[in-house]
Length: 314
Image (spheres, rainbow, N blue to C red):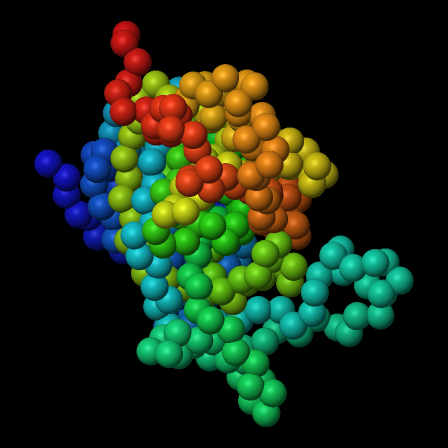
């Protein structure tokens, strides 16, 4: 029988790796916990841990083994204070070099969050009334990487990490490959809102209350993170240059269609070629992120379920 656990973190990690678990959960359990913002500020605005996308966790999922898939359902992501911050200017690496040299000195903006109205407003110059809708998401989360590595929360890989993809929002289910016993799941780097690419080098950085459900699919081998929401299937590739991230994400989607859903290649390839959509995740950090997206309604009637219903026979 599934349970709900409430965990109040006392310390945080700036690497995803083989750290001691803070809590053990069974597949199907819900978890309510809290995250600090990317610079280590909590719900009261105090900096309680060093900056650098500090992560809550890791959480040990009983029964998870290498070759399995951890299932993350994002149920609720709620800002835990009424203000956030972002950079003011687009990162120089996103601009032509001649224009990047003309940028002013970096400046942090303060954003006021009106959770009743669902908007964030720039507090620094109210006369311009710059507002964006609140669209909470997780910028960084994942499992322990393979071979017991500890990888910085500044970057990403097959284990997840700092992907800053707007699809990782409430209502999404994320599938992550398991590399170590218990998976060792981390989460953090909440954004109240963010445009594609995180081109400021920040979303609207915020501390959060998070409610998720963790589950397990035994024996489902995947190479890169996958996900779904009400409308889309998506795969996430993380690499630099950006074309390599596109390759990872596209290859993973074709594998999903062919190996999991059992579509023949002569069906999967032209279907994806005409119906694919791409959404850029992070283009600021050491590894870029690209999401390959396919509408669920585009799948032909003969496609098998995209999530295995039963583990393979031993």
